[in-house]
Structures are given as structure tokens and as C-alpha cells.
Length: 143
Length: 130
Image (tube, rainbow over all chains, first blue to last red; front, side, top):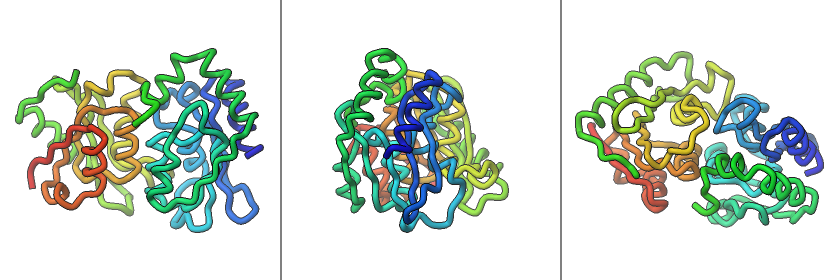
């Protein structure tokens, strides 16, 4: 999660939405990404989807754990189901409820860390740039 | 407010989505296309380009929504798909609050888990053609 938060901080420093994600296989980080809505003008580049992109095409996601600093939106939750990722570790779900229960209902193992560093960075961004944050989730906190 | 669409507009958009699917090259998955419309004209189009772009998330609807750029009028848009959406596409449609989805695959309606998911999450779903 420290690496995911580092990616979130990088995005914040670039003026973007501070959500970071990493993919872990065994004990190894195999890909890291962050939200690039602002940086790339790309609405589908959330932290998790950008991380999946950094990993490139794969035949299998067996044994992969996806770490994300913020509870995943429905797009990113859809990506978890689509690729058959079985385990997701979430930094925090206070700033955005996300879809942990939906993922669990589909058999995904979900752990929420309630991490203060993740909460603090995201909370600061939402206060500073509510316009970008609401655009990022299309103003939809609950879907 | 989601604008009404005539049958002709819907069919034209589905034809455009199927045309997009026909442009898929070098893909290892079934060809798929997508068109986003505001009811009057085409806002953006896309097709599966996962292999072409070495981008695992670049399914047809994702390509189309990404091509449409950053916007805040998704509730007024209709996404026409040549195919039943997969989970990533369906999740994206729900998160962004796209108002209506039209699928050019009538057989998909009864059995599709993702179309059921869209309807349960207040997305208007229509299926046309065979």
C-alpha cells in the first residue's frame, strides 16, 4: 500500500486525482499506476485501470492482488470481475464508499486497511478540487 | 434528461457500431464496436483495440467512452453496442451514469447477466436486431 500511496502522491503532485494502485504477484510488485484523468484527459484512467494498463495484456490474473488507495468505483470493480482478480486490498473507503460489498458478493476477497495516509491525501484533494473529483466519478458516490 | 430516440436513429447508431466492429484487426477476441450518441448525432465511436494498443482495458465501450473525452453529460447519452457488454464495460456504464444502452444482439437479452445488472442499476436497456 505504501507504493500505491506513493503513486497517488505522484498524481497529486502532477495536479491529478490522487488515487494509486499496484498489482502484486507473490511478493513482487509487477505494475503500478495512478489516475490520469487530468494528465491524459482520459476519463477511463482511474488508479486501478491505469495500473492494469501498465501491466499490459496478460493471459491470466491468477494469483494477482490489486492494491488501491481508494475503494474502487464501479468501473474499476467491473475490471476486477472482468479479469478474474480474486483479491483486492483497499486503502480507505471513507472519502468514497466504492463497491467492496459488491465485489465480495461476487466472490472477491476484499480487505480494507483504513489507512490514515490514504484518507488524508484524498480528503485534501476533494476539498481542494471538488470539481475534478465529481467529474471523476460522474457525481455518483453511490451507484 | 435522456432524449428520446427514433427507431431510425437507433438503427443507424447500431449500424455504425457494427461498422466499427468490422474495423477490428489483429484482435484475439470477438470483434466489437461502440457508438455514443446524444440522440441527434454521433458523439464518439470506438472498437476493441486491446491487442492493437497493448491495452487490456481497451474494449469497445471503453475505447468509445475514452474517445468521447472528459464530460459531464453522460446521463443524456446513449451507448450503442454491437455486443453484450462485459463486466468492465457494464461497470463503466453504471459509474458514469450513461442513460441508455442499446445492444445489437437480441439473443443477449434474456440470458445476459450484465444487461440485468444495468437494468437493476437504472440504466435504460434496449435490444435491437438479430
